[in-house]
Structure formats: C-alpha cells, structure tokens
Length: 180
Image (cartoon, rainbow, N blue to C red; front, side, top):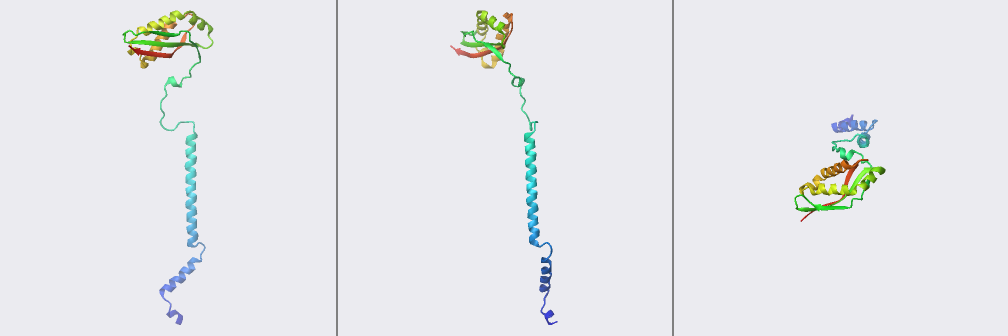
C-alpha cells in the first residue's frame, strides 16, 4: 500500500500506453503500411494513364479536330508521258505592257504512241494555238492565281484539234511575264 501512495495519474497513463505499444500493429508499422499503399496507388495511376494514352495514340482513328483535305491533294496523281518538243514560246500580251516566255510540256496517257505521234506532227499548230491564247491574254490574266484556268484553256484548245487521243495535263516548265 505504501507504493500506491506515490503513484499519480500520469504513471497510470504510462502503464496503459506501454500495454498498447506491444500490440499486433505498432504506430511505426501503420506508418509503413500507409506509405506502401500510397506508392502502390501512385504506380497504378501512372500505369493507367500511360496505357490509356498509348491506346489513343496508336488507334487508327484520328484524335481531335482534323483539317479537311481537298480532293486535289487526296487523289492519286496518274502517270503521264510528257511531250517536250514545243520549245520556248515568246510573245507580247494583249495589253502591250509585258512580254511572256513559256516552256510548256503536254501530258498524255502513259504508253500512248498514237498521241505522241500526233503531237509531234501537229507541233506547229499547237505552238500557234498556245502563242495565240497567251497573246490574247492581259498581264493580269497571266498572273499565277489564274494559272489553272490558263492551263485548262490551253489543254482544251489543243484537244479540239487532236484526233487520236487527248492531252491530259499542261505543265509549265518555265513561265515568265516580263513588263516592258
């Protein structure tokens, strides 16, 4: 009983804590388990994000907004043989402000020897038609923004005199409009 006199409430609390520390899971073990769970959760999150991202990047369907592509760029360009026997064509524009210099080749279906022979036979007529189309045009009409229209006009004019085939494409190797 003499020992009970010196015991205080603080000593009683220490004995209870000592009894708790010796349990199955101490405070240190709980801290270790908590950090292991956080690390495993972080790893699972990172792996999930990587897998989803790779699946999106490797899918066949494009992701996000797509820029529309014109038919001109999507279409496969056919193979043509080109007739280059027209030489350089020179002249003055209709408005008298410029001189034009054109080196033109004509595309036709690959392997079509009849068209090649006809183009060779009709070279003087073709040169004259091209020179006339260019000479009847003004300096403004010969600018690059009107090039496709000009090529179509030349192609249609040449095809009007062809009997054994068609010119499919007109190509300018050189086309200059030089002001006076």
